[in-house]
Length: 210
Image 1: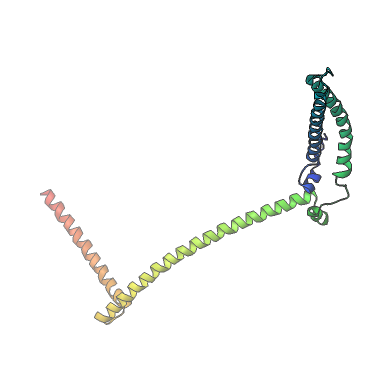
Image 2 (image 1 turned 180 degrees about the vertical axis):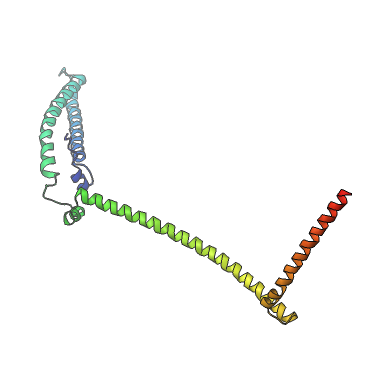
């Protein structure tokens, strides 16, 4: 049996040529064995009418096996030549024949260096794509944060508008005017509180000395 893998032929046929030859060989072997069994049974039937022949069934079996071995040896020799013919002339794709699925390689030939350069370019594009995806995710996260900040600003503005309405309704002035008016008074109040706290501390110290 040939050791050449014949992968191109296997791609075309869907099976290896060696497998095909092996099946043909097995089929011939099985047919040869069945034929010898049939011949043996015919001989045994003929001997049944010759009671004084002196030939036993065991002798017939040994003779049949010997003849079968003789046929097998000659068959193997002949089949070796037939195998060579099948693999070289029948099941072999000529070197000048290109399968349809491989024609694209002929139209667009690539060397190993060009193929590697293409692989590198694909890898670079994949990295750029991943970077753009990460940037997009970061941008979406930032937009979500901006939405949260916007919502908080809207709440502050709503609160400011409420204060503005209260100030105009009760004091007949705007919230800014009220805040500007209250700021100096708050500063004076803080100064008074600080002065009271200092005097309280002095009084406590005086009591401690006594």
